[in-house]
Image (tube, rainbow, N blue to C red; front, side, top):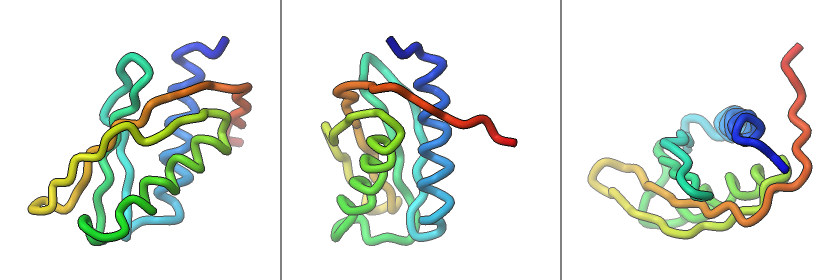
Length: 102
């Protein structure tokens, strides 16, 4: 069983990996986790109405690489402010192996 502390570590690591390779085009920020749903904000220089799903799916793949099976549950587009809010449902958490920074 994975506890909340381990999930927090995975989320911090996933944000670091995602943002390291995608800033300034896309930036992810976790706004919270509630009953197995990750609430994430994606912002940046991407086009909110075209291709944004690819940026979100990239984050899902990072979570999977870190042992968290998840899928997109809902996407809310805020085109005027150039960001999207995404609800990501955690389906399963496998063995998590986060390395502590040296």
